[in-house]
Image 1 (tube, chains in turn yellow, green):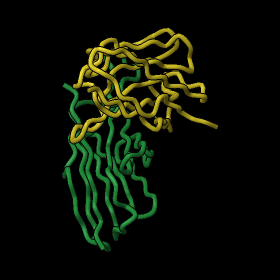
Image 2 (image 1 turned 135 degrees about the horizontal axis):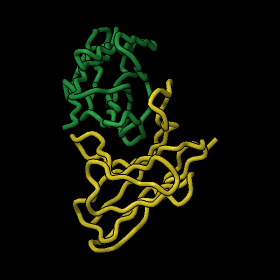
Image 3 (image 1 turned 60 degrees about the horizontal axis):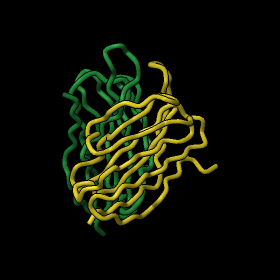
Image 4 (image 1 turned 30 degrees about the vertical axis):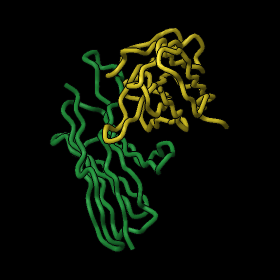
Length: 117
Length: 115
């Protein structure tokens, strides 16, 4: 059982380049999330999805786009990378889809280390 | 504004001592999570707290939730070096419609247990 898988794990980009981070989950989860983690700032939500074909903005969406064409995949795109996007990116997924769904756990991927020079 | 505040941000403690990490949040939530993160690693789920007065324990860690005070605590009993890590609380805030919403994280508490 792979859980949540992120690719690539490490990447160095030049300013202005584009790239896509892929998140795949094999748990049939409805909700998927992309977070970035920066020193001293915890995790901040970039975008999230409540189901296939739907996406929504989080706290820090600028400079990123996402797509959820298939339920198991959530893609995070950087169209024109900037040094401020140097960060560790985490994907997560969960079953959440109803207010009173209990005992839910959110599962995280291993992280993707991105450096923009 | 949705806010989650943790304190302290950094905690250095000796083995065998007890301490508490605090997590305050700004508005109505239906669940609160505690996670552990080791350096360079992903987040490991520790506890999910669902209701007022909920208390969960695992080994030397105990988490509690007071929804009226909008406060959760993570208590460490008789700390050991293996507990050294960064601990995050995360709060699921509710939309006005009552549907599930996004998860907002605290800034984390870096715990260092010294011998």
